[in-house]
Image 1 (cartoon, rainbow, N blue to C red):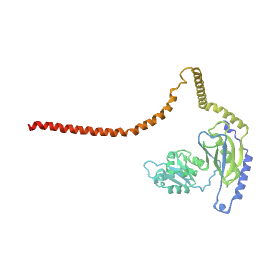
Image 2: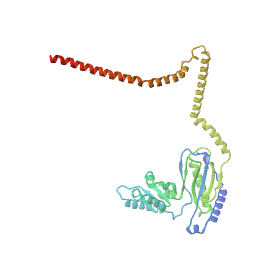
Image 3: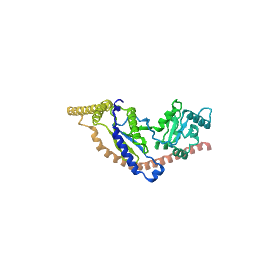
Image 4: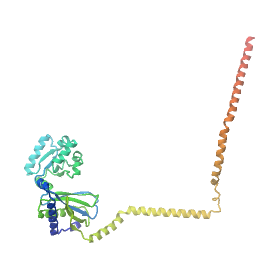
Length: 361
């Protein structure tokens, strides 16, 4: 973490880039955009030397607010015990007025979100009606299942706020007028909104310097992390602001050479196991060959199973011939059976006759 603070920006170079970007945005502005007061976002694009191991969300407080006062802000609160939804709304409105918070346009309790904004169309309408969303930190984990994926796809997921803090107005102002940077573990680039096109060059430069300092201080990575920093808008080309020294490249290469020795222990063990198995196989094959050479005088060359394939085809036709000749003796057997039946019947009749003779007497 200490090595990350070495990023130093040249303020004059940053201001020149901001002025060039603002001049480009003025040339691209049209009559429709001027009538609608369509301000464009100015963002910072960070390129890291390595892909982070863990995802991280960094909150960046800015000295100059990047959101106009006309933005609609919605606050999700928890359900107070022994109170209806209307009573909870009144309770939190009084609390915000007492603390001096004025930029919250609507308060929605958790029960109202579950019941009234359950349909898909209601969620889309809620997403379009507000520019920014806040949530009580006590209900933050329950919101994703009720909001849906569209809040997260359009990067309007609610940011948590501690409504029980003593400095509530300051905390809400920092969250609303600040920004956040999402560092993912799927790539080495990340972007954060820093200002808008209607701000002055000095205000934009102040926000850029504050954002870079907080990001470098809060990144959970060791060694030289920041490789490139660019400034861009929605329709402009990325303008370079900071480039790291080439000496950091040699440091990263040395770190990469050292890491496989620690992390690749399992791989090296597997390689050693494979080598030992291959050596064993070669030893066994060599021993087998030696035994064959030494045992040529024994009975190993005279293998009996080699003659079995020649005997099998000779036996198969014999079996077929026997099956073909089998029905002929069956007929003979039938004849014998019929003769035996006749002899039995004749014997029975003779016995009957012999029994009848003594009855006549």
